[in-house]
Image (tube, rainbow, N blue to C red; front, side, top):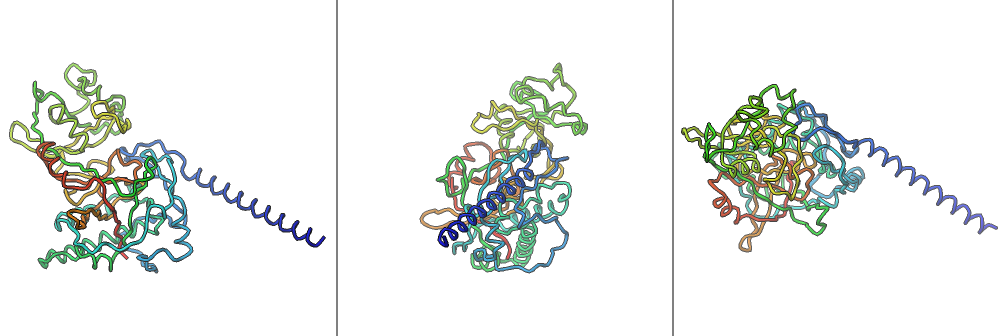
Length: 435
């Protein structure tokens, strides 16, 4: 009877624990479901968007402040040691697409690990990196309230990294570069010992739901191409690029038309929407496709004028992976700009970027302003390249396994191909976060 009672108590106790566990799991699932309710606004038209915040509650988002908040910090270079950090690292992060809709979850400890940077010189152009660091930091300062997407902590929240940490990293690196450049010396940011002493180094293992074997990040490359263009339509330059007028913020007529509709001549004399947009230039069809794919084009006009043109807004139609460019329905409208432009919630706010020190990536899930070092092996020797995630694109929504490297300005695809053939297709990647 005593033995029976003990068994009975054990059975009841076990059942009770199971009920508590199931209840907790149910409540957590319901909480997550409410938290990641679908949002219908487009990522590329964020002027009036509300930002979904599907973040881990233990590392909640911080609103941007002009001055840093002083807080007690642990040594984050080592593996997380507090119960809070351990739980955050193992709690799944909910990945979202460009419409802020939940896609899948990924545990942070499956993607990130704390390491030391290899003991090789870090390569970059000092002045160009400083420009991108400063411009990205200024974007946070000027547009944090208008663009809530940049306040998302993203998947690095699982490592205790906040938006404030990102800002501190940008500020510290900018200060170091300014001091080193003014003193005419190689910057300390190229010294791996200085990096390891002053920054957390977080290794990024690729997470590709369609290829679980992929461990390194895929490194694609993009560029700005120069094209000859005309102010007027000719037999050679017969494909227009257009700019939306100011009233297009309220009149969304352009969202009805595919790329094929535009190319059929709806904005040209005699077309059903003639006069609704401004004609900027006429290119060859190849020139248009490269401008759409790269996001920026440098046009040398036949009258001697030259200027950069950058994508402004699209027609709201999704980019379809695997579909050839000429068959895509998505179409972008352009604006003339004063430099190569990266991320920005509207054309007038976009970050001016530089080749060789800029990465495009998943801003919603990884986060704007992350400083990244990629590592490849050339001739048996490790080569390290540093840049800032200051751009994005349709291929990165969502994407935790790829970065796009801004390679430069090129005359044609052949010149571009020769240059990028020296660059890696895959690389080991590291985030740097100021301690």
